[in-house]
Image 1 (tube, rainbow, N blue to C red):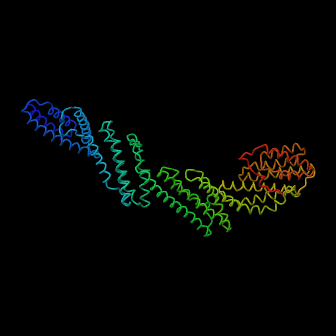
Image 2 (tube, one colour):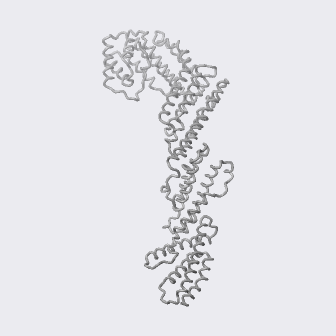
Image 3 (cartoon, rainbow, N blue to C red):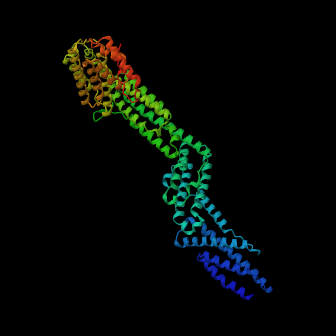
Length: 590
């Protein structure tokens, strides 16, 4: 009996020493040893009284140890020195040791001490849960940029910053105090995720203003996932297992409010851009020039707004399809822009041409921008592209109509007896070159598109006039002269437009092929040439062929019919490639 009592008194000072020095694992080992000693078989009847006193002392020491371990665990997120880190490591080992002791007692048939099972691991988890809750409930004081935020935004920001700092601390410091099997990083991540989620749910249940809604959504969908995606956290935390911060029904409501606001803002911003352009027009100002080209800020500014707002929404809602809602009303803006464009043409003021030239550059920029399918719903994209095509065509018509008006007297000579004289077509070319100067002030690509259309329209008009049949080519000599005239006209027209940047070689080829028909005398050769033209341009009709052959008045009606039948048979047998150019469908023949 005295021996056991003496053993108890000799251990106590060492236990207190361990406790004071934060050697919690060693202190636990001592208490477990005492527990084993005290709860072995007692054979001496007179030892019972001393045994009861020792048990009370052991219970008191366990209580003191438990408090110290709890205090140490509570300081996990504010370890300030090597000693405190060491203390936490020791506390964790002590908890693990006590868990093992609990298991040993479960396996015994003997009645355990009153304090068993101690369930220190369960208590440890509860302490950390409360610690995390208190950290997010009372985060550190806000930084300067939060002072002017709404209470909701400041609250979310503070919690989010605290969460980020604490999880960083866990993976850098706390993790090293725990054995891998305790998976402490994921434990903390779950606690923070669940606590943050609960707080955000309460906030989301309120009717939030648009700024608070946007801020909350960005934290849920953008900032919080961004924190977890940082390499040091992602390598220690199973982020997929955490799930979403908010349930789908709450997220959907927030997203709808956010996207509606972004859509409204976008329409306001781009509407102001157009209003500013209208103001410039109403004041009679010409658009500014850059490197000699008329430019308008409309497309650039609108594209910047769309890009910025929609790209930001992509990041926030993490769903390109949902973000497309923002541009779902873009067709309305394009319709307003098209109406403004048509009004400029209709009013035909002195500065109308300059504005239309600037608009053509905007149309091109918008057209290129709309190729990005991620930013727009498909129907919106198609409607806007259709409107832009109409704007480009009306602009081309507006700019080219005066040119054709000037050239009309020269067009009238084509296909007449005067036309076979060289100076007649020369006058047409000279007038065309003069008029091309009036089309300056466009960006290079827009200028090229415009002169390409002019070249096509002039070629169509040339063929139309030729097929009117005013000139009669009665013999081989006249037909050869017509061949040389058409061929030379084709070359000269091509040279003129090539100097201006056009690359439409095919237009020259059409005239050259038609010239060949005028030169040829053998019916089989004529048949082959017509088939060649018809194969290249399936919109060549029998009417066109008939008009061309009628110029050769030495051809009989029967010969013409043979050639037309050959063309008809060829077109029936061949299927036109969808990408084949059209030309003759634009040439009206009576």
